[in-house]
Amino acid sequence: MSEKPESQSDARAVAGKPDRPRWWRVLGIRRRDGKWLRFGLTLWGWFLVFAAAAVIGGAGFAEYSMQPDFCRSCHIMEPYYQAWHRSTHKNVPCQDCHFEPGWRNTLKGKFQASAQVAKYVTRTYGTKPHAEIQDASCLRSGCHERRLLEGMVEWEVATERGYPITVHFNHAPHLGEMRRGIELRCVSCHSQIVQGEHLTVTVTSCFLCHFKGLKHGRDNEVLGGCRSCHGAPEGQIRMELGIFNHQEYLDRRVACLSCHSDSIEGDGKVPKQVCGTCHNKAEHLGRFGDIAFLHLRHVTEHKVECSSCHLDIEHRLSVTREDRLNSCTACHEGSHAGPKELYWGVGGRGVPDMPSPMARTQVDCIGCHRHKRFADTDAEVVGQTFAAAAESCSSCHGTKYDGTLEHWKQVMDEQQKNSDRIYEGAVGAVAGADLSPSNRRRARILLGDAEHNRKLVMLGHAVHNVNYATALLNAANDFCRQAEDLARSAGSRPAP
Picture 1 (spheres, rainbow, N blue to C red):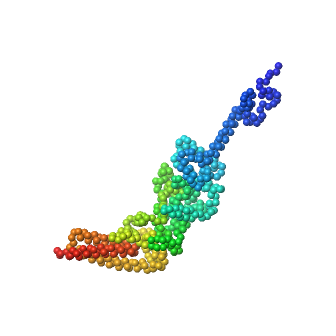
Picture 2: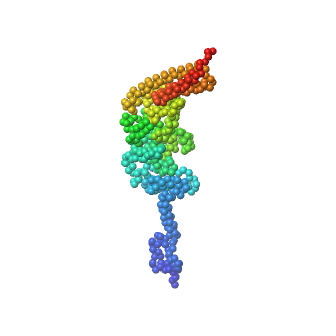
Picture 3: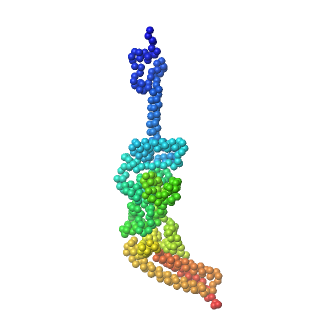
């Protein structure tokens, strides 16, 4: 007697029909006879479902993690997200800049980003995220790949007073050539030094490179020259002394620093102690003076902000009178006080402030003091002193003031000799007068003021400010006459 099949599947098997089609077995599908759901999943089927869910979910998460909104899920990234959202790159996804082109670099970037997420979850992250953007990301197709071919571009920058200045800039020499022996990158200039501004150019980076190592003197020129970045003002400018036109002086090849040397402040030095903020081992400081190595590691190979190491260099068109008065004393403490005060028309007694016409037009000392007093071989021992000469006048003014310097010297010598006679007469008159104590104090004050003005003219060299020097000597003569009047009214002192 034959046995009855236990199930319909067994019956199909006995009848020679396959239990399940092959594609059912591949997908892990099975029949469920007698159940409400006639089909179910095998163990393999469930594995495939979970695997597919993981792949789809992973792909979805990977796509979501590529969106800028995902970056701000870490609270430490919120300022950077807001800076990006306000920038000109707000329509560029983060990975287009932070991942180099190519799928391998994308996978590498995702791995590094995953490590950052893990640090955030485990609370082992730093408070200042660090990211490096390679030039290949900036110059990729569809972004700035033609930037090096565009030639000169114009960049408008606001001055400290809010006036716009157009800076002429060419990317090719900055990225295609070694600058100061350093290979620059896009982010060497386009960085985030200022919090809240994403990949923007800050003028402090420009100043540091162009003015670093500049010796504020007569034979120096900034890197690339002043006019390589911005031209001189066009047309006529109305100043205190009248109309001024830069073109006349540019045609005579007058150096910009003759008038604007005080527009650069700072030396951009690197204090050795700043290295300790990143490097905590003594051996890391062994190559502190190796400039080429330090810039290779910090600028070319890695993105370190210039201002993280260098002190700032400031650059502006003009400064206040107080700044200009103090500029000389940075090197010569008190040794040039007389010429400086006379040039700026301050420090006298009984005379209002009266700046020299040259001072009011912001001509600096080196505009006139251009001629070496000592030979270079002697200067190596005793130092160099630069003297003023008539040639300095003609270099700016042409033949307009030929002979004026010598005429000023003759006139001021005569005025000083006349003032000396008046002063000596007043001193003798006061010494021989029978003055009361109060009048004697008054006479001494008058003679002291006169002596002060005379010394300011003599030691400050009258040609620095002829009008002010004349006013000082006239005031000194008037002080002497007042002292003589006191002596004359008191009568002579009786003989002992």
